[in-house]
Length: 171
Image 1 (cartoon, rainbow, N blue to C red):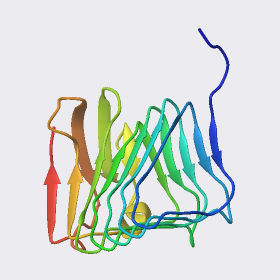
Image 2 (tube, rainbow, N blue to C red; image 1 turned 180 degrees about the vertical axis):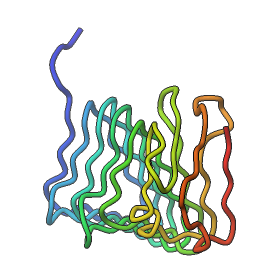
Image 3 (cartoon, rainbow, N blue to C red; image 1 turned 30 degrees about the vertical axis):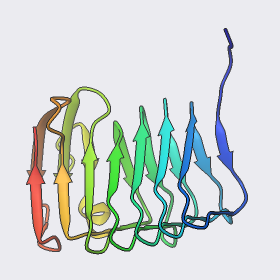
C-alpha cells in the first residue's frame, strides 16, 4: 500500500501525432507554457481532487474529458481548450472557466462528480456556471447534468443560452 499525494504536473509541451493522452492523479495541474496537442487523439484527465488548466489544449478533432472530484479550472483568458468539433466533457463538483472551451460544432457537457445542484447564470447554489463562464464556451450543443442521477436540481437564473443551437438540461 502506498501513501501520500500522487499529483500530476504537466510543465512542458506534450504533442502526439494522432495518439491520445490520459493522465490520472490526486490533482492534475497543467502549468503555463505547457501546451498539449494530439492532432486528432482524445485527451482524458482524471483527478480525485482538482484539475487546473493554465495553457492551451488542442486536439484537432479528438474529444477531451475532464473528471475531477473537486474543482475544474481553466485559469484565465488566453488559456484555451479547443477540439475543432470533438466533444468536451467536464465532470466536477465546481467549475471555474476563466479561459475558453471551444468544441466548435461538437458539444460541451457539464455534470457533477457527486450529488448536488448545478446553477446557470446567477449563483443559485451548487456548482455554478456564471454568464461570463457561459460566454467562454463555444459549442453547437450545451448539455448540463447527467442521466445517471448524480445531479439534483438544475437552476437557471438570468442565463443567456442563445449562443448554443441546442441546450439540454438533464437531472
